[in-house]
Length: 236
Image 1 (cartoon, rainbow, N blue to C red):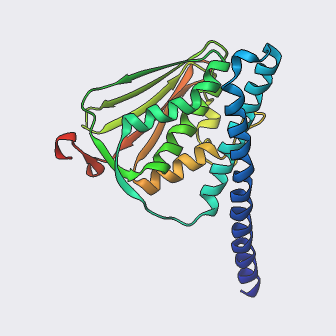
Image 2 (spheres, rainbow, N blue to C red; image 1 turned 135 degrees about the vertical axis):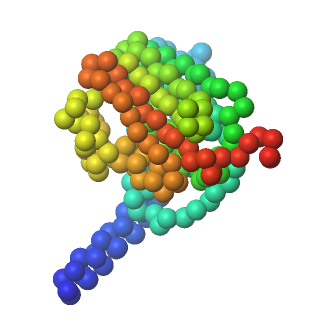
């Protein structure tokens, strides 16, 4: 029993140290991002080689930031900061963030959004993180010149569905049962945290997350919003 207490205490301390380190890492990352943004403002004055270096650095920075955000999710306490937010607006914001990586790979991102989609009551940052993780996975799954489609629509049960579809590598039947497990990944540079975080956040926010996939043909991931969390635009 004492050993269990010691182990639990060590994990608690490790979690606090991890969170502190990650927050400290974020500060220099912000400086690097500002510097890259400044260089991008002077693109016309730079050579092609320098532009390629800046782009590669920006993509590496994006991957580090995504990893830090995912690790912070596991180390921070559960807090609720719910408010009304537009599913479409948050989706568009996530798309803007991922667009640079998509352009680098020549992956087209298309949007199909039904009119009059209601607002949802939830934690905006957590919903954005789900969108970002799923969008990033979709883009990374595509070969150069691939396509990703984002859809927001009402299904037959009158639930609102946010869907992202790619024509990438797809998921094997063997891997389908484990893709939401912590640290499971088939990517050479993957952390195996993206989908695990999505699953945890979706459960916390009381959303349903699911997927369909065929190896070699692509995947669809769905986020289904609970009717109790939706608010019509007319009610705002």
